[in-house]
Image (cartoon, rainbow, N blue to C red):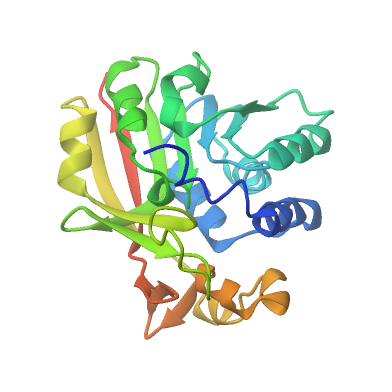
Length: 252
């Protein structure tokens, strides 16, 4: 598999939406829930690496919520526009930095002094999280992680075709990966020194039902990439998205 999985880079509307959320101070439900779980499991100063952190739009929520020590933050992302926007936005904040790089090469791009990994909404959409779990297994400096991802009883990978009427190279190009992982897989990959648990995704149903992005106005088919509520379950188009949080702490 090459980089055909990377639907992020061609999707300029998505990058613009993330940058706008930062600029306008949008506090996403997922950010608030991640911050709450981070506060619950962590102690002391945190050196956070946010995998797929975009322009750092989660940082303001994290900084406001974390009360147990200092917090330094690095967003690791493949999107040049998001990294540029975030770097400019936080230019006067020495506690925030950005790294342009792929999560598939996690050991290379995650700063050496990181003691906490977080990620929200990115891990289901990459070919594999094995590089991230390998870093968690091997790096003694890592003490905590909080991931919002798709979790179920088995590991399943779905390819969502992203074009309404062009079916050339279907499922070979122009697709989005949606991967569900089991807790058992993550426990085995992280190793015996990590204690993992699955916690619920918390969201405002009414807010989710009103959620839309500007790209839908020009392309209604784009709505298949946007979360919607169906009887208390989250779908994107035809795909059920069992969002959960997996949190981990390393024993000393």
